[in-house]
Length: 212
Ligand SMILES: Nc1ncnc2c1ncn2[C@@H]1O[C@H](COP(=O)(O)OP(=O)(O)OP(=O)(O)O)[C@@H](O)[C@H]1O
Ligand SMILES: [Mg+2]
Image 1 (cartoon, rainbow, N blue to C red):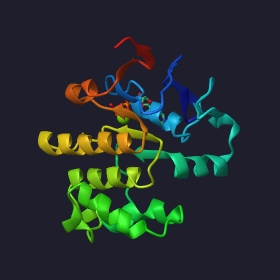
Image 2: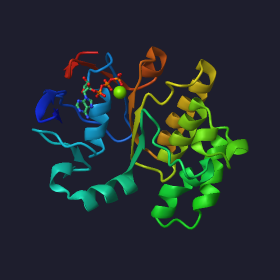
Image 3: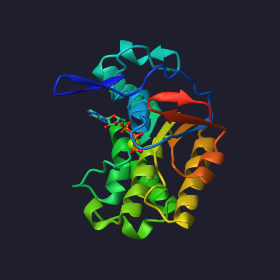
């Protein structure tokens, strides 16, 4: 995988090969710039590999068009981005309800309320992202990613902006919801304690997989 910067290829990932079992929790660690976020974007079908392929439930993402990829993400994948990507014009509750509404769920608002409660933010339902702290935005992003019960959760440093205690509570929630939905989890983290709670640790170094 490489990015193009003004037409010049910037190599990022090379010969990264692994699979995620149903219900498996994998931590991805590695220094800044080693390609962790890029790996998640590939798994989400938001970037395409220059060579090789990404398969989800036996379907190769490279063979899907943009609509089919969007459907796949909506139905099966939950993403917690490193920079949250909340919708600025929507409040916390609406941000969480959005994927449920798109999926046509009648209980969108009820479920969004329950998730907001689960991340400890019931009192912040009407706050827009700009009126939330970084850690609060992170918790809204996690609730939104888990709202539709995805089978694959991709989380980029989901506890990066949180103090130890809140981080642990949020990680508990992430693990619990994945367990309940039998979802798999690929978690980028610099936190050794959090990585140790996963079934397996993948270490990236200069775009290659090193043994953990
Ligand atoms: N859109 C882009 N165009 C060009 N190069 C990019 C682009 N996005 C990322 N890169 C480069 O790809 C490399 C990997 O980036 P990536 O964001 O995957 O790293 P990371 O491991 O997530 O780092 P961090 O821990 O700092 O979040 C970096 O060297 C970065 O400069
Ligand atoms: Mg990153």
